[in-house]
Amino acid sequence: MMNALERRSTFALSSIFALRMLGLFMIIPVFAVEGQSYQYATPALIGLAVGVYGLSQAILQIPFSLWADRFSRKPLIVLGLLLFAIGGAIAAMSHTIYGVIIGRAIAGGGAVSAVVMALLADVTREEHRTKAMAVMGMSIGLSFVVAFSIGPWLTGLVGISGLFWVTAIMGILAIFTLFLVPKTTRHHRNFQQGYLRQLKQVLQMPDLNRLHVSIFSLHLLLTAMFIYVPSQLITYANIPLEKHGLVYLPLLLIGVFFSFPSIILAEKYRKMRGIFLMAIVGVILGLIVLTLGATSKYLLLLGLGLFFVAFNVMEALLPSWLSKAAPIQSKATAMGVNASAQFLGAFVGGTLGGQLLMLHNTSIGWSILTVIALVWFVISFGLKQPRYLSSIILRLPEANDQNTAENWTAELLDIHGIEEVVVMAEQKVAYVKLDKKIIDEEGRQRLSQLFGKQHVI
Image (cartoon, rainbow, N blue to C red; front, top):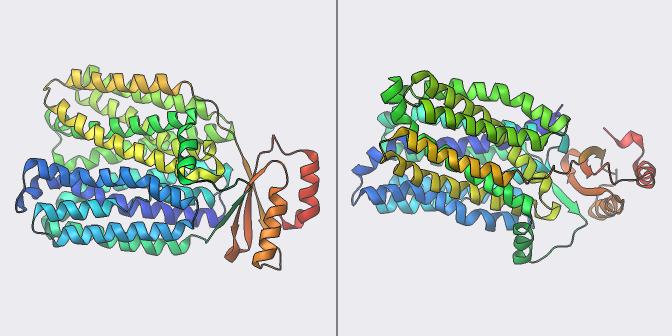
């Protein structure tokens, strides 16, 4: 069970994701129409205003994550949220489409998704990582449903400029939730290397690349589906656009209900690879149902339900697996590459979804998405079971000065099998992450001699 510190940190960092995503998602269902009111607006520029946010995110995730492996993560998150808020304010004050594009590009420049996930990995024990990531995934899904439900209504109250002001305010509010997250200092035995070498190391790891392909494919399919499916819900299920949130919310809850047992199996019984591949199969089955029965109301909802169950499982497993597979000293960098792949997937999915709408043939459209999912499964089949680390919590030495802390962590890291020590000085504790399969009896004895059982919480 997660301790109070982990629960508080998970809530705070999930709230940062939710607030950012809520502001972002509320724009999507209304801007194609409302954007026409801006001076110089054309369909191409309206599309650019929507897409430029994701492009900025994709470009800047890697630089932010490289910095996050060298410097404190919290100040970088604050910088990213300030850019998000400033960009929203610029878009809110703009009267031309060009001003909105500039504002959206600046807002996307706050590319700290990977940094937030890396910080969550720091402040949670290995055994509870997937649960924490699942909560974060649920917060994103919930913000998506809420945004699509209230975005049109809120726009009617405050207009499109007011909606941009709401996104700016949410960015500022997200900064305050960081006060709930403890300040951390990370220690590991690996030497610091150059930026390019660090990035090259991450890009040369086959399993990490398979995970990048997975997040790219998942968000490509998700974005394409949500461009493609609304018109089908209207045409074949007779559900008006303003009530689509009432469809997505129950499906999301069903997905969450089924995803938690899967997460427990993946972590407790070390079946992550099997559950991961089963989730991809779930995506494929959902798309096959949609291919065969998209014109049927009940088959349409069944296919969406299967997709949502698989999506929730994948959203929980992917960041957790990534944090296990990434080198300790390059955790944020690996997550940055992964986040870039996610935003590129959304960009490609949006473009593909628009092209599918032009086909006027639902079966062909869903068949194309099914083929993409099958290719994803083939690529992912080569994944190896991740390494499972364990965590123990130690109280800091009473003499808690910098020299004592450095000597303390150096002695710990000298024990074969201990991979990382994350120190939370204000809470007077540290998470020690170790591989139980590697640590030998001599290491256990040294650990007991150094700290004794009374230091373990």
